[in-house]
Length: 444
Image (cartoon, rainbow, N blue to C red; front, side):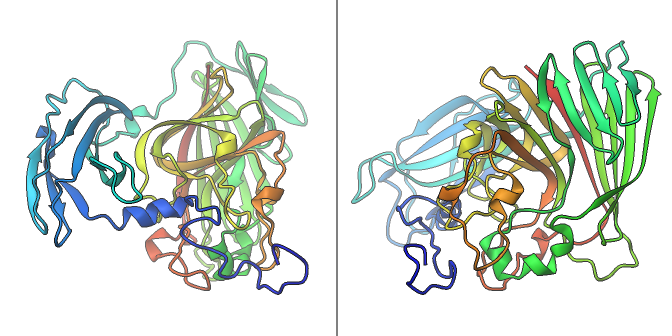
């Protein structure tokens, strides 16, 4: 038992709920809340600020609420306003024009946030409480237009010895380990950015739903596979150095290829591909397809443009809104889960930064939306892997490092039930070919 040695219990069975034992929100609480609104907003003539409001209530109009809107350009508010009087009868739809004005002056992605708030306190709810909200898109984000590295005239210097391949610029140094093919050191202006191998990641710390579905055994081939180096090659091409390696992935029959283009500014344009063995029909789905890197603990700030502010996943992100967020690494792991498990991921990222307090660190972008997390714990710390071995988050000890996972895809967390039901098919990652393009660049 959780409280003593003698009360019988079945691990953490039925020790779950929408709210935590301290009556705080779990991340999934926001999702449950979002799925039960009585006010719905959809675009009508959205570029001219016209939206349609549907009052789903059967007996109550919307006179007790006011509408608050914000126009976001690349995740930051550029205009806002309120509509105090909402004359929408029960079970009716009304079109409303918001005074957003000319949006052509604002660059990049444009989003419209709409919230419905109480005018006055009602029972347990204070005035200003948000009873429903939506986020509408006026202009989509163009990830491919942001996916490029600089083209400086200088060329990095390719070197090395029997143990390492080195790539050097005027104020930075990168090393690849010849024994495993991984980039395992990156020093920028005298500061160590990466101090462990940047390597492929297919696993995640098992969630309660994963354990209930038996994924610890069914997907074991992807849990901690041996990545065997098959080849590594280097060449200087124009003003960039290219490093390419191939790796076998345990007993899956798959081949992972990693290619890096490094310019004189120390930017790394990379590609991770997985080529499945098409003759193998017995290989399970993947937990995730992405990469993992480790930074020193001084890099303890995450700043990102994507879904937030709370953690969210492929099948649990409707409640999260796209915006520009800045948080501490220590805040990323949800400390009120009953057991340690996967936590802290943010989806639909446009860019992701991990920095120190001065703003120096790394930025990651891709040619499409991606997801990422940054934790003060290693995968082994939070991945206990059995239904009966339960470790409370309160028992975790912070490491002197920041562990970053970033990926093209991560399997959904499920939640249909916790004793065998798997995530819906569209949120699974079948054994197949995948390609993940990303850029890692130093920032200051």
